Image (cartoon, rainbow, N blue to C red):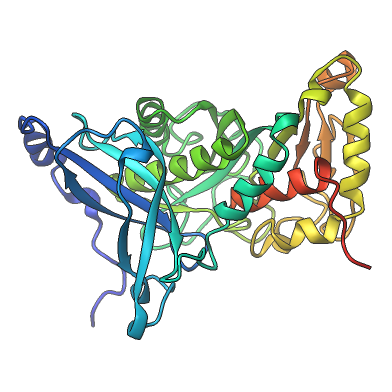
Length: 367
């Protein structure tokens, strides 16, 4: 019988690749890898082409296309989908002058595809740019073996209960640290504004933070950080799960907590603006939950440092609330708030856009 589990690619000798990466690259030749979100709205795809001149920004990189019928974004009878470069980064995998470019996807009629949420997010950020919306996004994720069981867990069994793993140190507590630190360095090299990382409450679960970044740049950088994580995990022969509740039972889920502020919130006595913003959010709770990630109801149960998905709440230093006001911000009477509702698999374009539309642009739900 054929084994349904793929062969572990970690068995490949990476020193062989290193020999070719070190080959001198012809003068004037640059490899540009186009990265985009596919028809699932969660997964990323990529392909590479050669340029005869090193691009200095995404504006220097031409549009391209791909077979959308193979990514859930078009039918075979009209399969070409356009790639519009929007944000460029250094390539930590092939080095030299090579680049990674994040792209929007457009249909043949030049209208955004169904999973191109960046176009709408860009419009919201432009409308609110005078308020200088600032975001810091905390991405939790779980490392999984190729068989779908958490990395480092006993096969067919469970490790000791939660408690010692959060920010833990040690071979039986910090599962997968090499991959995590490789990702950190790759983000810095690429130009992603990564600010930190730590082991999370569930073993084999980790978190990193991107930001603070203003406007559309926040979600652009966050999507590229996910791409880098997935590519590095590929090299280690490990899977990355962004599912909000990868393991049922008495284990923490995974979120994508989003810290948000406007200029008025960061100024003296900005706490009043923060409270007013939270009141606006309370009136659109269901609207936000709808775009805050699939299967989020499995995570937002009121347990494991979450609020109940059906109830809106906020509090100072309260990780069991929908919105948390950090203790320091409450004491200094200005700063930011943390929206703890987004799931780890959310689209940061949707989350940041809706926060701006609710708080800055005063959009309301139709009655």
